Image 1 (cartoon, helix red, strand yellow):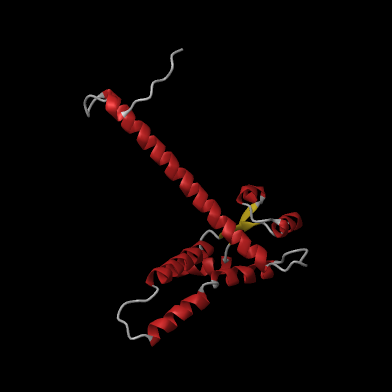
Image 2 (cartoon, rainbow, N blue to C red):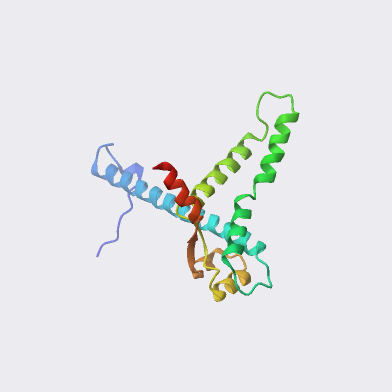
Length: 171
């Protein structure tokens, strides 16, 4: 079998030639593959940060997780940006400026809080199934490496009563 020749821009004689279309297709495919990889890494990074937050806030002596404790942790997780948002609002009220100071940070915090609340009220927040004692111990002993995230058994936890009331309100 012959060696596959690589096509370069210098060997193309016409912009509408087959070689030009092949080169365009190769670059487009490589770009979309890289974009897909970046999205996967970003999702995994966000999940890792969420799991680290829960790991830091779980009581180390706890052997079994109850539903009430997990719901309280989720509510704390959803309210973790409230203090920073209050500080930004305080800076807005004190200053004499017409423009918003720290506008980009405030927008990021508000949009992430809104997205997480919609996720919680909708399908539920994806977390480690901490009701299984072995998974709880695995989360406590996790070092924070993202390559071990697939070892966790994931489950969704949402606010079922609020979701039911939300759907009754819509109908």
